[in-house]
Image (cartoon, rainbow, N blue to C red; front, side, top):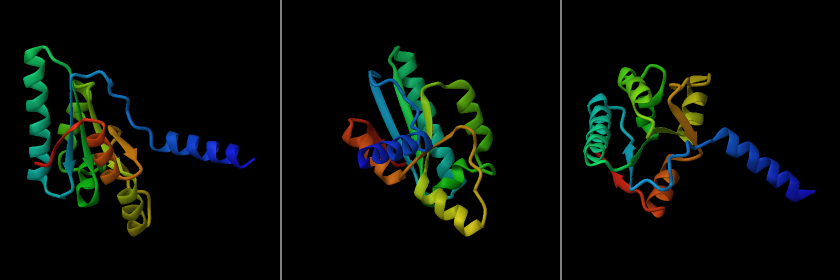
Length: 146
């Protein structure tokens, strides 16, 4: 009986913390670290993503980009984000960009606020932002902290 319970718990976790599937066979993969509640830093991360995508598109090469926000940087992905319009534009114009929100930070922010902190629709929850960054690097993704 225990294996079934473990499997069920795993399935629930997988559904709650779904990571968008970006093509594993992409020629280039970049994960960008955002951990500051600073509009200029957030815009720099988005500029870096946009420039890298444009560079590889011009060369005719595929690229996947993920921006991982945790700690104070999670503000980047909240409904009242200072860069909400840009994130919405990215979501509308790029199918190769993921916005990953740290589940640990979200849980703590929601507890402190006394209510669920609403994330932008483009945000996908991962259990832990730092772990996601680490696992992406272990899987061969290039890492950038603007």
